[in-house]
Length: 218
Ligand code: GRF
Image 1 (cartoon, rainbow, N blue to C red):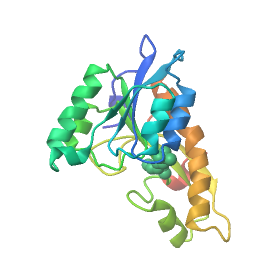
Image 2 (image 1 turned 120 degrees about the vertical axis):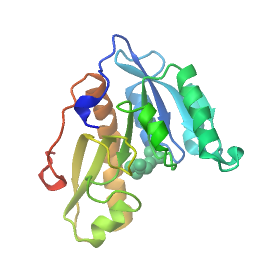
Image 3 (image 1 turned 180 degrees about the vertical axis):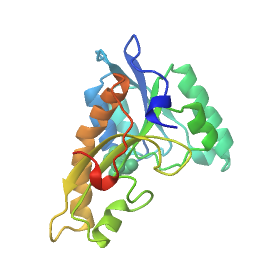
Image 4 (image 1 turned 90 degrees about the vertical axis):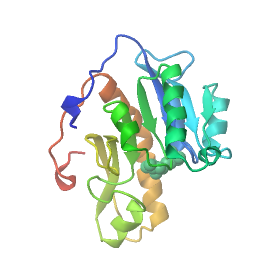
């Protein structure tokens, strides 16, 4: 799948976004700020937040912002990803969602799920993909002696952090940076980049990127 194979955006109305978040929810906050439900922004509004951890700060944040929430607890499905995903898919359909934004959801979605949402599900990852997919990308970038890192917003396919790139933003790595310092610098960039990537996608402005991580534009 490439960006050009994805269903056409823009939509002739304000898009309904669902954000899947299970952690501290800082990207969720930036998406809610950029695309408020009330009054709805012209391009899109966060219409639903799906959380799979009851204690997640993301759940309280969404509730405080007056956004509809759905807690879909993995543990309630006796470890069955199928049942969990069936419920999630039905929830998205009922809510009339146009675009799903993953923001620290902490669950790998099945190929059946990502196929069903192909071109309409995005993720944010704290590295310059295709470099450092998967876990601890900031630590691995430091260990490799990289001089820069960044964040990538990409369409989600059946692989891990492997779908077509919508947008990348770079940050420098300074001497003496530890994992915490680098993670914070990247996260701050994510908060600006994620809404921008969503806008780009919804406006139909996303184009195929052929650059490698080292050749990607800022
Ligand atoms: C971010 O680092 C993001 O890149 C990764 O998960 C983290 C989510 O952080 N996919 P937050 O919950 O949005 O603060």
